Length: 98
Image (cartoon, rainbow, N blue to C red; front, side, top):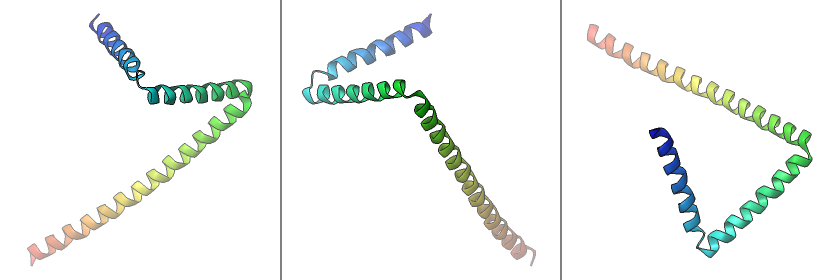
């Protein structure tokens, strides 16, 4: 029950906050423009579903490629750090032995 009250409080607070911000003329104008843009984009997507699916697939492939290259770069950086730490550690051990 407490989770439900929390969720209801957060949602009602967001709604009230959104309504209060609409008292400003510039905010109303911005919201109206954004809603018009969303409406036209949604209408285009509904009328052209195959193109929408294709665009989503292309975007996901691009995201996947970026994540793969990023993880490769991260692995290379970690290997370089590890090698550098091993060199520093080995130099310190050699000085202590002598």
